[in-house]
Length: 203
Image (cartoon, rainbow, N blue to C red; front, top):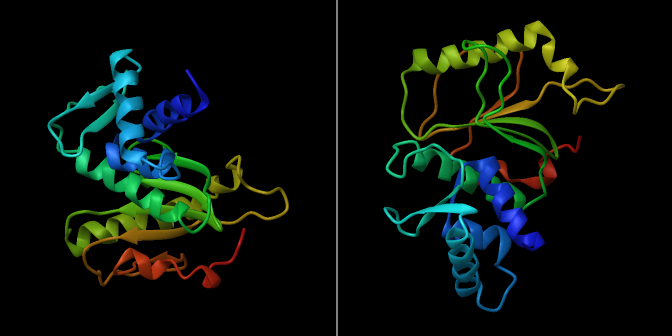
């Protein structure tokens, strides 16, 4: 197994799943025939049981070998959208400390879809559906509560002399009239409006 094989498997372990086209974008786009090369590698890794493939989707969707998400799960579009978000981020700057659905405590605390240091530390929520104002306000309130706990100051990525709370990006189909006390929320429509790189301060 070569380094690219290992990188693909590591990505599948982190993201849980990726489409063939997403794997091409992350690992093969520099090649002369990226799709054919990717198909060949994925066929071999599937044959050798390093990864799993779902043919229910077009393009095919690939999973880590021990992933327990069913091939027809309704969660798949959400996870694929998280991969698309990271790909969009990487097009502008490489991410550091990337985590997918990191846990910050028991049920009832914040549940970001993505954390990364991307120019600066950032939490990202990717909402595919339109929710009520009350649901979104509760989500905002959870971030305010987490900020008040101060637990974020102990995160391993923090610099000893510069404790910062991540910016919060919420990607939604619409905007919400929610109340925010002190935190920095970004709700771009569309996501590309965020990517004005000269306006993002580096951490």
